[in-house]
Amino acid sequence: MRRQILLSALCAGAILLLFHGAWAAPDAGAAEAAKALQIYCIDVEGGQSTLLVDGLGESMLVDTGWPGFDSRDAKRIVAAANEAGIHRLDYVVITHYHTDHVGGVAQLAALIPIGTFVDHGPNMEDSDTTRQGYATYLKVSAESKRITVKPGDRLPLKGMSVQFLTAAGEKITTALPGAGQPNPYCASEPEAAMDPTENQRSLGMLITYGKFRFLDMGDLTKRKEIALMCPNNLIGTVDLYLVTHHGMDLSNSKAIVDAVHARAAIMDNGAHKGGSPAAWQIVHDSPGLEDLWQLHYAVGGGQDHNSPEQLIANLDEANDAGYAIKVLAQRDGAFTVINERNHFEKTYKK
Image 1 (cartoon, rainbow, N blue to C red):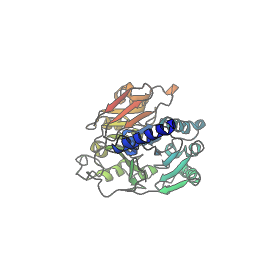
Image 2: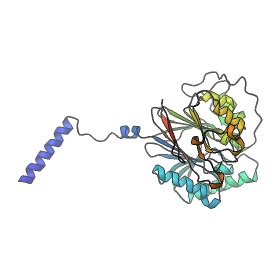
Image 3: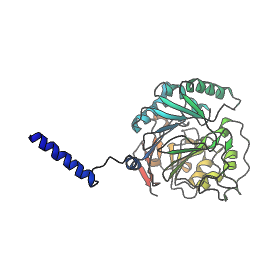
Image 4: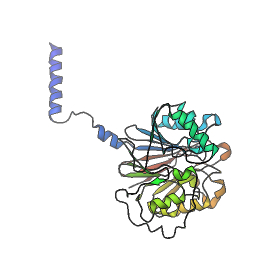
């Protein structure tokens, strides 16, 4: 009898709480909104590998770094995935088929499950090395789902938005919402040379998470940058800019760097690759930029063309520990950048 009375009281209490709205199912949308978009700029020694994990746990990896080195780059990617709390990559986006971007694909696929590969279509460069990279990619991607995208396409993600701006040498032709204004930085931009390589065919993308906007253009070179941004700025402004082409001066025209008006930039350079003084200076001096973070101290840049040490993830090329730069982005547009070497961090408030 005592047990029946207790159960009746508990049920009555539950009904009363429910009636007054004090007892309700957790709000999944609110919980997700409180979570950050995690971005890991992984050190693959002058190549690219960028991992994004949104508040719903959806994941996208952009490029796979180099092959060889006892699966060094693949292991660093998996370590970042583990830190982010995931054990599967929903999407692996290959911006183009150069070895420093697609080379690690076979070793990566051996270490972690991959849902879908995303690319711009067939290799279009007359190079034995690039043909070999593409052939390996075709073999590995045949074991998973593979999709080819064109400018304007989006990935079917719910937590973050990924829209492709360039692909296979083509670009979007309609301005993104809020963009489309004349670009004042076009007038002084010299005509850029033709580029026959895969670089100009890079997948370029805008990732948004609420109000936060992150731009990654792969290795897109100047002629294609200018076509995208002139005479009108089709992208608008962004919060975070992944410095194109590892900070090489074949890319990073003022027409795009200055026009997107990023608050912070991350350069995925190596000690001896990328980080050219000319490109570094353009990014460093771009209007509105507060900080330029680097994956490596650029040996060729010297003291005049490197950021302060607290903003550089890897200082000593002889004892390179492969530290990453991590970003935690909020839906209101604020974001925090963290140097995993020294744990220095800075928050950029909206």
